[in-house]
Amino acid sequence: MFHMDRKKYKQIRVVVLLFLGAIVGVSVITNSYMLAAITIFIGLLFLVLVRSKTKITIDEREITIREKAAQMTYAIFAPTIGIGAFLLLFPSNSGLSVFSKGEWTYVESLGTVLAYLALFLITLYAISYHFLNRKYGGGNDQ
Amino acid sequence: MEAAMTNKLKVYRAMGDLTQEQLADELRVSRQTVNAIESNKYQPSLELAFKIAHLFKVKIEDIFIYKKGE
Image 1: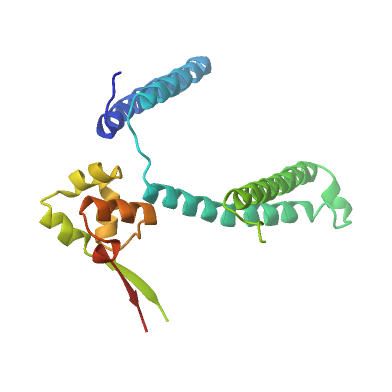
Image 2 (image 1 turned 30 degrees about the horizontal axis):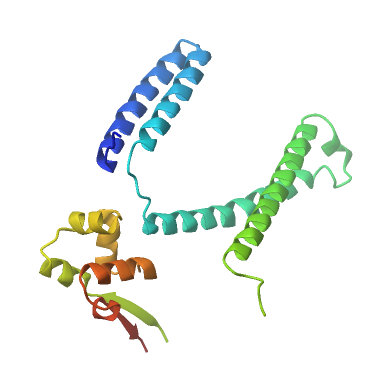
């Protein structure tokens, strides 16, 4: 079975991404979005196949960095969309008629979308926390 | 009171005449991880600490030192 190391994989990835970028750039300029979509799909498929042939070990430091990055992203993103939703929904629900017509209806819709997104994010976090907590021995006090 | 971990990985690596790259390959981690451990920017997991100790045929506490600060 053919194997390649991490360094070779990174080199191939750079070449593929440059090639992808060039084709997508040309596609956008010529307005052929289908070509761009197909190129991205084939490029990603190729990278996945190449990666499967590579002995890549994701080391523990990288996992720690990913965990901290995910934690930080959640800590910033959840309050941002929550507060954003509140600020967008607040004028429409303030009782003033000026906020319930025209472009304000779009603002209210955007606020609703953000509110559901915030709920979805918090629910997803709570569910994954629950399962991971059980996986790592939480809740088994005896 | 602050506790800190230090290590002698660089010393043991030099004694074993290994480069960071070679040690990283032996441990199946990246060179950056070895560098981060040596410069005390990253504390390895217990598993990796055992791997390192086994590789140099010493006890964990010979390489990793727990310092209880003031």
